Amino acid sequence: MAACAVAASLLLATLLARQAAAELLPPLPVAPLLAEAPWRCRGPATGEHLPSLELAALWGDPPAANHTVTLVTQLTVDRLGMLENQCTTWTLPLVAAIYVPVTGQQVLGSTASTAATVELLQGHLAAFHRRMQQEAQCQLRLALFTEEQAADSADAFHPINALRNRGLQLAVTEAVLVLDVDFIVSEELIAELAIEEGWEALARRIRAGSAVVLPAFETPFDATGAWRLEHPPEAGRAVAFQAQAGGKQAAVQSFRNGTLLVFKTAEGGTFYEPTQFKRWAQSDDFYPISYTPSYEPDMILARALHPWYDERFAGYGWDKMGLPECFFHWGGSFVVHPRGFVVHVPHERSTTFHASMSDGKKRAYQLREVYTSLRAELEAGSYLPVVSFPERCSPLPGHSLRQATMDGSNLPKMQAIQQPMPAAPL
Ligand SMILES: *[C@@H]1O[C@H](CO)[C@@H](O)[C@H](O)[C@H]1NC(C)=O
Ligand SMILES: *[C@@H]1O[C@H](CO)[C@@H](O)[C@H](O)[C@H]1NC(C)=O
Image (cartoon, rainbow, N blue to C red):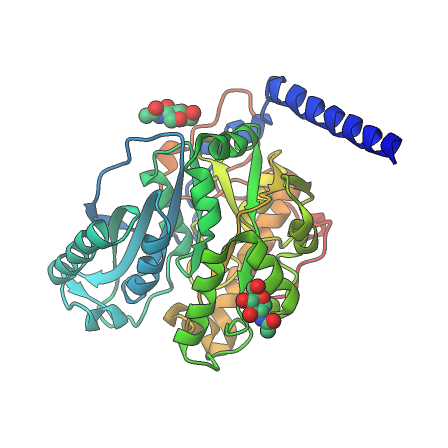
């Protein structure tokens, strides 16, 4: 008995010493391609259409603190309530890029029911920002982006990745968490990030080129598999907020008793499997995971090592997978945060979802083709995210960036794809 206890305490001492030693070691060098992520991009080739966004208004100052995480999100005006969900829970810097299609000063699509002109919309958003500064806890920078459209165009395909990039450009802190507006972050993690030890544990990993993954959950009230919610949104919302406030132990219990599910369970996809939720339930330290294609984790990255989103993705589908895949191919690694997680707040499907699925899922299939070519280029080592700010994409001399031509004429043949395409999330 006593010998056993001595052995156990020796083991513990060894583990602690090893951990202390690991913390003293200089960080590993970041993979060269990843270190160049801010410049690794290209402008659109002939025939590649990118959204063309104009910054119409900006509210809120950049935060003074640098050693913290900015939550970066994007939305349409009808989703301000979701932004409010984030603002009432996230106490750190938050950047939100809001999108509205316009003809001149005239607001188009379903947003027009909120405000008919850009000026009216600006008044509406200014009031929202003021109210968030007073009532909510977040440090909100709110940016309104307009896009000129034909006056008779219906709701445009949501320029999701162009907005994510604009949001990233407005973030100034060392770490960023690009998160869809329908997710809220566990209160326990936010509290942990606000203290020095919590920040340092995260910072050490992201500086070394790791993505810190936050397991993503949904409630049984979600519509991810269906076209419409089966329960009133309030029912699922209450469950999501309860999980958000409950911390990891409660989340684990809920996960085990089936009141909290792996995100997109209802869709039957395996997009989140690499996170290893059962291992997370038992872990009290960060653990490494391997990347597999079609993984789309929510993750905290060093802003300086964050690849750009490919702006060809506008509309619903395939927009979220390219970035982790790119991060991985450029030498990034993945670790899971032992306590942090995010929860999806149930809502009805967006207009852009329905638009992408209409006409025999035409748009969704177009986007899948873009994703297929993206994967082929990554395999061939020639991929560069396509962005609307080519002036920021400056190849370094003698670098493999030179191999990628701007007209895409050196795109590899499709046979170059080693791994099978994931099932369509449609
Ligand atoms: C914030 O931190 C990043 C990464 O360490 C650094 O590059 C940047 O210059 C810092 N910004 C400020 C304002 O200190
Ligand atoms: C599941 O666990 C959560 C968290 O402990 C608890 O609030 C909930 O009541 C449990 N539900 C069931 C059906 O056991």
